[in-house]
Image: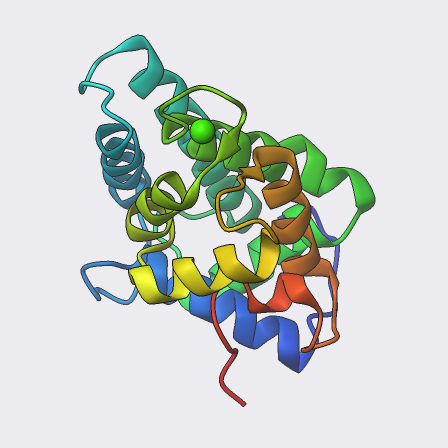
Length: 188
Ligand SMILES: [Ca+2]
């Protein structure tokens, strides 16, 4: 622990717990390095990058930087939901540079892996791939978000804009802000 005590609002706590559940795909109740390795492989594969390819390893590196930062913050090698929330808040939410240092590069690498045509943006199909693998959310949620965020039905969502919405998810306390709807509604 770095000794920083971070206040986590009830609303942020719910949002963090939801992300924990999505990470904990096998429902074991804790996260370990393998969850991050597996997820990186899934995202890279969805983008057509072979296991062991340069692109896959770049994505995996960002996933592992995040994992090691969280585990290091908590001082453990398995994270419970409480430990995840506390470590994530301390690492990413507590100071302005935290998101940019750790989480922004992680989202860019992950979304970049499914940017199949390499235009720096996600079209409807590419966003579906990202939702299905990185977020583990169904196509309906992805399509809804795409329709909300991209005015032109044939348009694209720039990855930098996506990073901005993800930032909003963690920093905006207004349930009606667009960033807070990127994973669907937060349960009351
Ligand atoms: Ca693209």
